[in-house]
Image (spheres, rainbow, N blue to C red):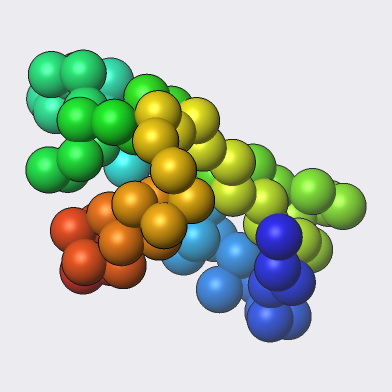
Length: 78
């Protein structure tokens, strides 16, 4: 969970990018894994407090060490 920096342009840009990612993951990249990581089954960004904070949740099938390794080395570019 993190706080968004203030500003209407930043809020609109973040909303647009998350909607674009949501569309592409549902309709274009729907092979059942996130990026090159087949053990991540679910990942979601959610706005909280009138879009002042952002929450990230994921469902991972593995250990904490391999989770961190996968997100840092394989998904971190995004």
